[in-house]
Length: 103
Image (cartoon, rainbow, N blue to C red; front, side, top):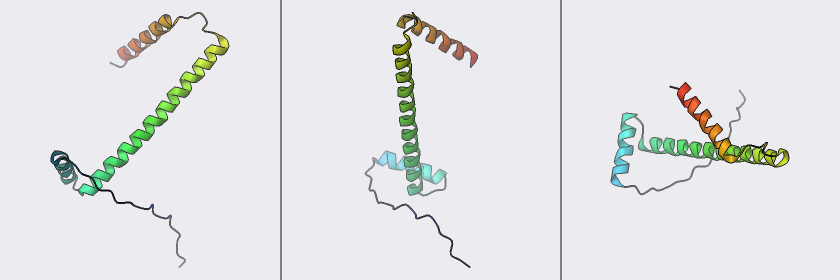
């Protein structure tokens, strides 16, 4: 039977943390409630935090690109006579409408 190739495992590094007693106790309690090791819970939280940070960075980049696209479009086509105060008023009205519709 041929040996199946497997993807190489990522290299692991050790990390030492110094925590307040209360934080370690809270993590230990979470681990016990989940019937997991403290190490597993901490790694899971780190992974979640890294994922959230990546998503936030992607969102910020998306917003920046949208703003720049709108700015460039306004520069090329003009503001079409809408003042910033009027634009803000329109946006705030739409926000209020969406909030009302989501109740």
